[in-house]
Length: 274
Image (cartoon, rainbow, N blue to C red; front, side):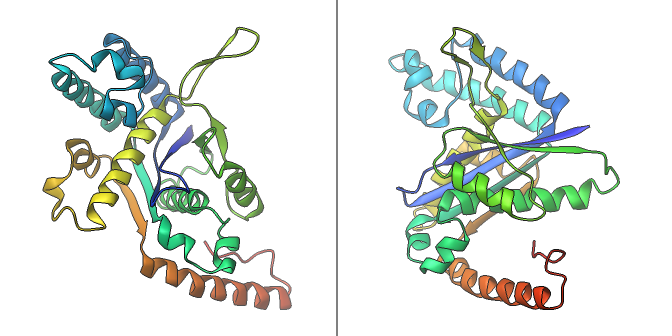
């Protein structure tokens, strides 16, 4: 059996908030999910799902833009897609960073955390995922693992380099979220679960923008998709606040001290903080 983790980003280094989020499922269940997801979109003449386009009736949702019942159509689609996620995804993971606060951290913090909010958020999700696998799948040591991020997201080269260097991390794969045509005319197939990850990342990013400056007072004021995402599947959702970012400096100092001590007694290759 193989577990596949699909992650996408909401926001980038130029925005105030960066969110990386995604879901875990088996290769078999993701295949079934992908077929049903694409079939449901095709029913409404939609090529692929992108949350920002769905919110503004742009891109693949443009043909709904001037319809009088566009809201009803979107609600019906959202309900069906949400059910597909809940019935196929085993776990969710997400991390949001307040980008303006991240940029204010010192240069050493930025350097050791890949100097990219995307990289920090993605690596945090990867850590959440590894801990879940260790706790829930310990009895299945033969289980294969794959981490898939959307190709083209800013910071992917930094993330790839960082994860490959660190002991205990699984190198990420980068794939498109939708099908595309190659230069030779052949079709390249996207990894459809990334579209679900895009939705989760977008909703979390919007919720963070509303909650952090206290525009909203309770979860009941969140958009319907976000309220649904707070339920099934279970998972870990984190945020780096200014206080968390201050703690990064202390964590780096502690890790460096332990690494130096380990090296001095000859066990540096065996010790690494998770």
